[in-house]
Length: 488
Image (cartoon, rainbow, N blue to C red):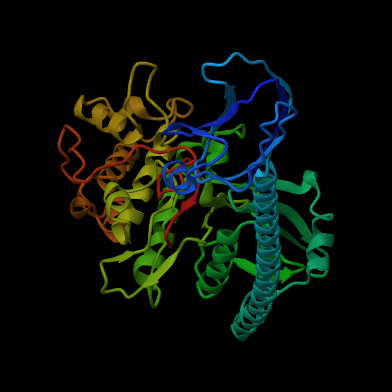
């Protein structure tokens, strides 16, 4: 509704016109005697009341208009025709309910927005509360399941003979509460501490699995179940285990001479050639037991120099069975997912994710080349060379300079025949074609000079499998410079 009010003076008889301009039309019509039907039809406007005084005095006019257009222009005029006259507009006022209506609409719109936001907030709060309740409930269920599982594991472990269960307090006391000065080393899944059990007068090594390592817990269970059943002079002896206070710990016999890599690449004094050769035979003997002499075939999957431990007499003790897999002797390969350490992985294992005795033999070949040369498997041989250890040794072999690859720290005092045999067997075991590698038994026979050495090609064959480049911090199954596990 639009209300137009104006008052004026006219000194003669006059006609007063009201002019209305809509969005599409402009009409002028007489204030008295209007054709209302025409006005409404053509403009959508309607005068509901018209007052006009023709006496030459004041002429107030009040017009009430209903409209249908979105916008309009309103004007007014007066005329005396051919007679002279004077007209004075004293005042005019224009009122409209449009603002009030728009305000009401805006107010209604604001109310709707506020209501919508309130509903959304309530829904979010309810959703958050439900999510919290569900997550908390799942944690409780998982915790109960974990407790049940650990109880089951305890029962399974205690059924067997050999390793015994330790209390956390016993191991904390033995390691001086796992102090830093007792730490022997640290790996991807935890740290190893030196300890002493006073009740049995024994030095021990305690492996403490990292709390946040789910993979470490899996390896913990695998190691206890696997190594507790194995008995061989060249395998690390598992003395006991413990899982209390959300801690997972493994207890081994203490190896006073540490790991093989600490002597080959670390600050410890290098050992002489005859000990190196004896270590090679001891490691081969351990692998032979795993592959052929136990009731099942054990594929170790992580044979490397840092997992070869040495006792006080430099006798080999192969350890770390967290990645080991059991299979029947008649099976060739098992799909396990990629696991191991970059530099020791067979090319076909990287490509197919299938572990086998042959992939273990490849790792063994790399380790004995490290023993012979004193070089790491991941070393680049020279600033301008892209050759890895195996390629480098094979290149020397092709040039007839194999002895020049022997560790210079023992080059003045080594057995040339043994060195040649050791390096040739190392190349043979790390052959790119798995079908051309020897069994570990045959490799031992050659190392003991019980059979002839193989005739290898002068140039290293091209790998038959694609070897992907190691990716740093990749979430995909990949090769790394430390122990890895993906998809097991």
